[in-house]
Image (cartoon, rainbow, N blue to C red; front, side, top):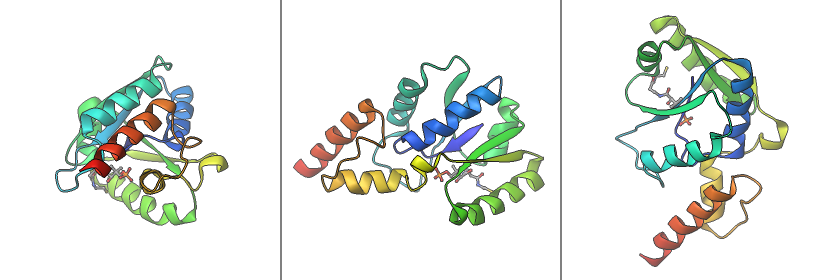
Length: 158
Ligand code: PNS
């Protein structure tokens, strides 16, 4: 199980998902439906972008979930959550969630060090840079780049 907001998916996410798909028979990418936080993209749009990006892997499927991650894991019979760690700063937050999740439901978390190429990447930074016209083409797939340009052009026109 690879959970996240994926607003939008970046090459950093895809690196982790791709590596997980080589380690596990089946990988479910779970997009969190967060009622209290509106994203740049709707959950359906994020799912479509993830599907397009991971279509080449035969063993990855994309779903959305709400509520606790461990409940979703139980529902799909996933025993392991895979999380990418970009830097020590991620570890602090991720360790707490991992410990909570094992305590709540026995769901294990495995940390995967991200490829150093992507160690500074985040969806928020990509959105921020794209919003002000910076080049994010090295950081997202082409179709995500196009979606970012479309969405931000619409936002600028409003
Ligand atoms: O991409 P993000 O926003 O860093 O992903 C965070 C996510 C979705 C993995 C995390 O917020 C999560 O698991 N949320 C589900 C709610 C939950 O289970 N919260 C308790 C975690 S201990």
